[in-house]
Amino acid sequence: MTWFAIALNEDVKLGMAIPCSLSGNDLVIWRSALGKVSVWADRCPHRGMRLSQGFVRGETLSCIYHGWQYGSEGGCVSIPAHPNLLPPKSICATKYQCAEANGVIWTTLTKTTKALPLLREKQIPVRTIHVDGAMNIVANHFGSPGETVIKLDSPYTIQIALQPISDKCTALHALTSNLKDRKGVSVWLEMQRADLERSQAC
Image 1 (cartoon, one colour):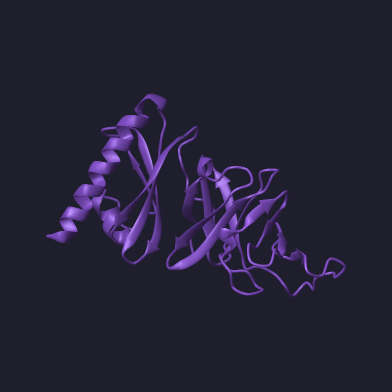
Image 2 (cartoon, rainbow, N blue to C red):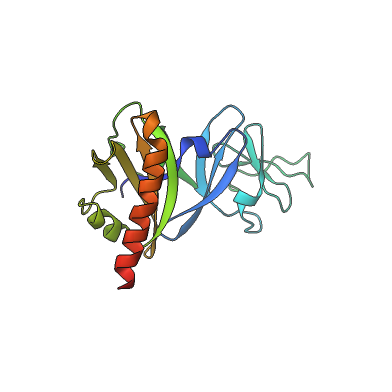
């Protein structure tokens, strides 16, 4: 399994938890008060509630249902209804490898020793958009079949990291090397989305 982009790092601020999907798998991305990013299955081990609906307390993520708290390593560290109980180590959220590099948060659904996709240095996040279409269709549209990171130099210097949400939807995480290009890149991305979705409707 390879690494996939799942968010621009500026979109997951301190103390925030957000949902995302990767190849049909529901995930939660959260950033602790000290800035550590974690990616887990979006399911509380207790009752199956979505952890993305919970809240970050310091270095823990708390489920909104019964308040069970999980540390950054995934293990349950506190059960409010039983404050004197030391939770067993078997109560643990499903945790995935993750990393931050060049403005992007990456994860993989199976453990890997592969290096992260190579991006140009000093990239400026632009935005994330969702396109109706499988990742291979999107990659082909940009002339980069089989790629998960697309590098373009016209009309802007831009990189797009692809996230396969499902077999019918792909997220495009766009970055540029020129701050002045952000607005133009954003408009250009909207045009690309329209072209992609129009071509599939024909």
